[in-house]
Length: 76
Image (tube, rainbow, N blue to C red):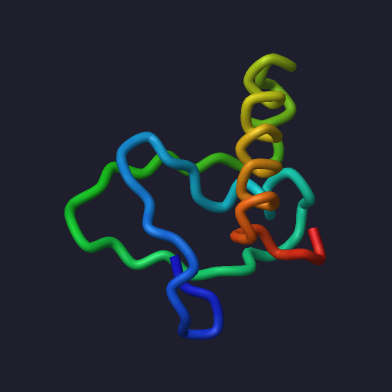
């Protein structure tokens, strides 16, 4: 994961990308470049609205963990 050309995180199997922008309904704040083949599932705000509160809660937990680790955009 890159922001302003600097690596800010390395992601692995099962990791989420784009969740901060999806939850906040704002543009992404980093770029992701795959270093190996990957399978991607694209979700929109409308799909998010149909998810259970438990699922949305887990996504929000990941966002908070990234914020504490200094990976999340401080503007979000």
